[in-house]
Image 1 (spheres, rainbow, N blue to C red):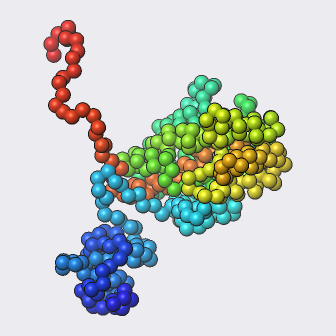
Image 2: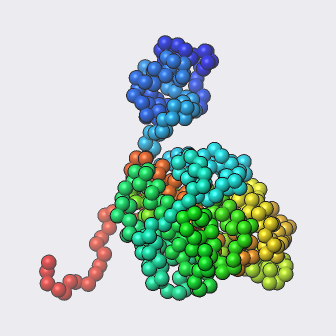
Image 3: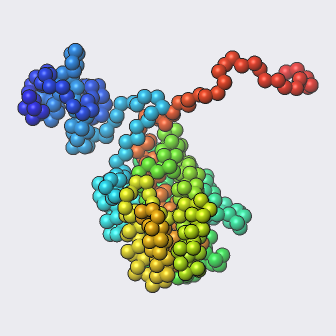
Length: 445
């Protein structure tokens, strides 16, 4: 009997037990947990033809097709509640970002299309709520912004951008007495204030004061407010469009290392500022958010020397990988780089850096079929617009804060402290003799 034939029966016992089921199967209890209903309601779904069941061999219980149950959960709007995984093996289910076939999607919508057509704040609202809020703008609370600016100003002059952002987040947290409100509304309120606080706490590029209109009011975009913190070159519309699109493209990218760290913090019910701090701590690694700085330095050298060949050769000779190339999740060109390169082609100042980037790709392709990734595109933006080497890291951090918040919202709704793997101990087995040490000379305690 087919699955369709089994539907519409009065009892789950009427399903075929002669044909072994294929695919992942769920018990009645697991199905009820996934749908967020009582076991009796599961059988009601069967009787109405919305689910089919198969009697488990040698048991009086029934099993259900996992894909069919998950589809019903999506149709009924139930939040999927998977059974608790084995200890140390958390299953991280997410409805935020899907990456497949060299494309990526935010809540089912092509992320590159969203970035082309929507501003960063609109994209952030989409990944947070699943609603597209036209013209969304974020505003920094005055108390949080003032605290963050004071804290950042106290740092040494050589401090990097991520140093400043981490300090700004901690200061903003101290100024928010409601930061422990982990309800969706409370988290979103904190997030909408935190992101512009992070941007506004950074000092102006070049160390001088902001020009008229560069501070930005609540009516201007986050990209408009961030630009003068990255470059002292006045931005034109095309350049601002590149920055805004880059922020949108980088808002999330599934379970990157920093996002996993953020979810671990959220699993412990840390407040959203602490979640962002956890993400920032991982982002600074040279294999993650800081990779664009390496690409910036390489691209600057290519522009100065007029050719990628000697620069690529130097990297290969010293055993260094060529930055800005390849991505473990894409077999072709990183779709984020593809979009940004297209926009940068409309910025006259970016011509030299863009040609240098293409030279790097073509030179390296003689030996390895590597494609450009988003770090190389960010390097083109930073090199061509007079930004420091860590500008791409700043863009990455501010943008990805939106994704960390989205993942925190998901994780707050999960079983707490599920991110607790068990270590595989490989040390000496007990009992071991107590280690020798000097006799205590002070009074006995």
